[in-house]
Length: 287
Image (cartoon, rainbow, N blue to C red):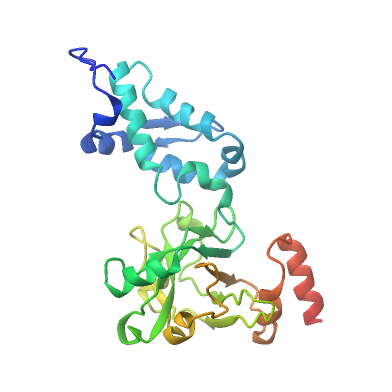
C-alpha cells in the first residue's frame, strides 16, 4: 500500500489499523444503497439487518463496495485501503454484514454452540465467564434480543448449575414498541439423541425490573434462570445434551401465551418447518 502523503510502499501485513480513524469512520454519512435512508456508518449495519437482510444475503460483496463508494468518494487511495482494513476489522465480529442471512425475525432463535469443552474451561478459569448468542428479533422492526449463557454458573449458581439469561437490546424501533417488555420467555436445551428428552424452562418478566424497560444502553441487565441445568448433567461423559462438543439451545418469546402443556410439543417440531406451519400444527394440537 502506498502512503497518500509520501508515496512510501508498505506491505499490507505490516499495516496497523488506525483506531482513531476507525472511530471517525463510524460517523461518516451514509446513504442506503437500497432505499432513501440516510445516517451514519455506525447505524447503517443495523438498518441493513432490519430492512434489507434478504438483499444482503445475496449481495454481500456489492454491499461492502457500496459502503466504500458512498463513504470515501474522492478520498486518496491510501485512505481508501485503510478504510477497507477498518471495515474488515469491524465486520469480523458477531453480527457482521455477511452473516445477516442467519438473523431470526420470528421471536425464536436456535443457538448452536460449538467447542463446548473449551468454553467450559474458559468459564471455569473466568477468562470468559459468559457468552452471548447472536441477536434476534420479534419481527421486522420489532424487539431486539439475545441470550447469555454462563457455562459455569452465575452468582449463587456458580460451580453448580449452568445459568441462562435473556437480554433485551437497544433497537432502531424501540420508540414505537410497548414497554415494559412482558412476554413469557422459554429456554430449551436440546437432547440430541432420539430420546428427545429436552430440558425446558420458562419465566415471565418482572415488569418492575430495569431488565425489561426500554433499553437506554446497548444491552439491559440480563435476567432469566440462574439454575437452568446442573453442571453434573452437562459435564457427564456421553450426556445427550453435548454431542460432538456442540450444544443447541432454543430461545422462544411467547407472544401468544401458549399453555405450558403445549411447550414440549412445540419444541419438538422440526425447526426447518416454516413458522406458519409450526403455528398451525401447534394450534391443531391445542384444539
